[in-house]
Amino acid sequence: MISQFFLLSQRGDNIVFRDYRGEVPKGSAEIFFRKVKFWKEDGQEEAPPVFNVDGVNYFHVKVVGLLFVATTRANVSPSLVLELLQRIARVIKDYVGVLSEDSIRKNFVLVYELLDEVIDFGFVQTTSTELLKSYIFNEPIVLESARLSSIGPTGLFMQGTKRMPGTAVTKSVVANEPGGRKREEIFVDIIEKISVTFSSSGYILTSEIDGTIQMKSYLSGNPEIRLALNEDLGIGRGGGSGYDHRSSFGSGAVVLDDCNFHESVRLDNFEVDKTLTLVPPDGEFPVMNYRMTQEFKPPFRINALIEEAGAHKAEVILKIYAEFPSNITSNTIAIQMPLPKYTIRASFELEPGAVGQTTDFKDANKRLEWGNITKESGPVSMTFTIPMYNSSRLQVKYLQIAKNSGTYNPYRWVRYVTLANSYVARI
Image 1 (tube, helix red, strand yellow):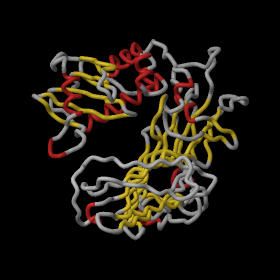
Image 2: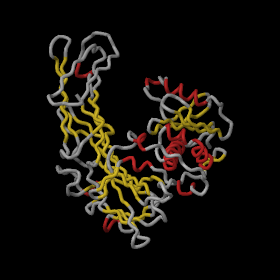
Image 3: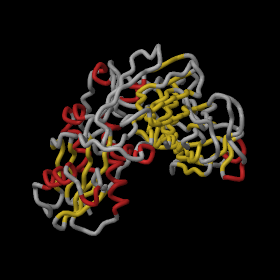
Image 4: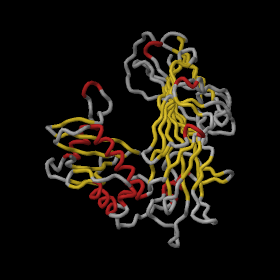
């Protein structure tokens, strides 16, 4: 049972507020943001997703910089409420097209209409984008394409040699193209988040891929879809090693530890030809989630070395090696390394030819001491995004759509994106 729902910006501005039962004080949004901003209990830097203040339970998730928050005095399942908040974010995104402060403010009437249908007097009714279509009557106000350039996962959608900007998927599921016609197309994302820990000598200690195949359909009539994966796909540790030194689009068996599928997916032929059959619901949804801990080739290798270079001075050498083909480009790369708390100054030297790269030292402590620099430095952490690349080598071989007529040929777009989840090298 939910008492309130509110949506805050990173600055704490209240974008949306809905009080369903009147059981929680109206100033709860301010109480929540102040508590999250200055959270210092047990030395934590960030507030946990669930906490209690004066008998009120606060639940929150952060999605693209926005805080989705629910409050209640009842003893409810935290997992249920956190999942509800994620689904509310997904429903709003499906209807307004892109999840941002601007788009929500422009569509606040539509957003309030959605919230009133999703939750009634504190009780959840439905979070299905498809079912909500029968009860939602406001039309979305679409943002100009120029304002969407920095939104969403990086990368182009591909259909053979054709390319489509990643912002193409930010359309509302209920909006039509100019002229009143609906563009028949379907988008598939293969998104992988990689966690790797390297030893001080550069060897891999732990590695894991957390992946998902997401789909967003703009097809009318809900046609049946057949989505084929690698024919040599194996599930379970007994399938052997998936390690291969070739590119992510090379051959070789793909072995997943485990996976789960959306409720709409039928697995009648999955064991035979690795084909998934489904009738996609409206909106964005995960077709398949999977995990891989078998050996795989990481996209980057990190070598880190630290050694004393004189009195009160140390030298850190960081080397990053890209392990993917030169025709693939990574972006939004950032590397961080904590230094001893008594560090007062740092200088940088980049390799010749390093164009467009920046370095910085965040000075937070002026105390001058010296100790075991190896124990008090590191680890090195790295974040990145690599479009059109995936380390698991899981591929969508084809996307077949049941034809309504001989001339029915909707667009099919596929995109691969690899992100760093926890990419760390020990010193």
